[in-house]
Length: 354
Image (cartoon, rainbow, N blue to C red):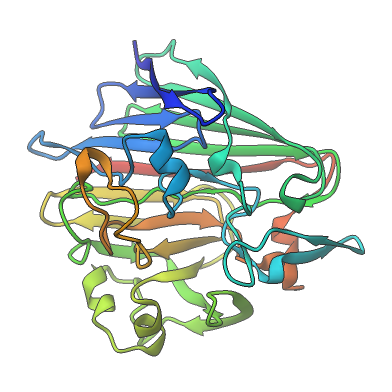
């Protein structure tokens, strides 16, 4: 069977948490939970047939619920930060839970990452199998307006790619910007820091941010900075750069704006590990991507799988998204607004190979 279901444990309330393994004849197989749509494992072959699990994550439900970092999870309703935990929509102000200093981050106190999702398995085609996850976020949940019905489809394709298709509809004007918070280490999650990974991005601007990493609506040209990935370069070169923002935040935690008009799912980024030979291409129809290099990992948090201690720069998050705090930036607010009768519909694909 292309999809195998097994028990992963239980929630504190006693509700079962299930794991689903998707596999075919490609170089990639994955395990995903009904808890938060969490990607717990991605087993990827290199050219020599050597398999490594390239996703940081945990062995237990408790660790996913108690550790920081949003490891491998679906993020919503809104990924990234909303300034002051407030926004105004159609003349009404809404207040959110501030879980990141003065700001609301990744959906608030108990975002989509902490919810149990309904799951439908689609595995009649042995080459292309999928999980369809659905969740209804009630009006007022975490302070957001509208009953929001969300569907996320994880598809494992025979070309070695994992497609994540996000869909949502609402009965009242609301805001949404979903993403996935997987930490990729193409050498394997236990292989050490990602300094030697190279990155290419189709981006020439990043958001300027304040001390709390909140965008203010202005931009920085990447030319001459450690944020210029228009030609691929090692992440470690950036870590060592004396650019003030790099030194302040200890690595990358920035929203990169893709060049040109967003029209379709396009190749926007390529991550490579020269040591293992593994490559991951990122395709998306989103306007931005947050690059985060695990700068704030708490090494005292629960250990990763197989008792591997958490460590700084253990992986790279490539979180496709709308511009952070867009709802509070008048020029960009529309990219986050969803009205009744409209549909939120976006796709990101991570394709593995040489």
